[in-house]
Picture 1 (cartoon, rainbow, N blue to C red):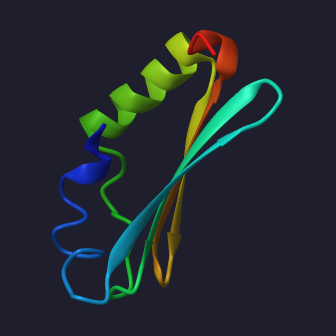
Picture 2 (cartoon, rainbow, N blue to C red):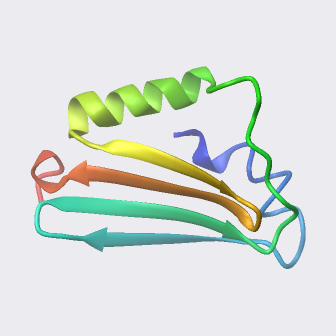
Length: 91
């Protein structure tokens, strides 16, 4: 996924205060991976829509893993939640 590329060069990792928390959680039938940026300049949602990598990632997660990707452009940083069906991961 393209979560690790651009970003974070110009936002979360652009200052000593910026960081990214990556948290995984298991629920009854789902696995959730959260990418949470903080301590950075305010993030702005791209006005030109989703790029090819984002569209491909969403289609793959939905079609092959029975899940979804949600992005939240918060003032303190971008938050992304990837939720997939555990049985599609062999868990």
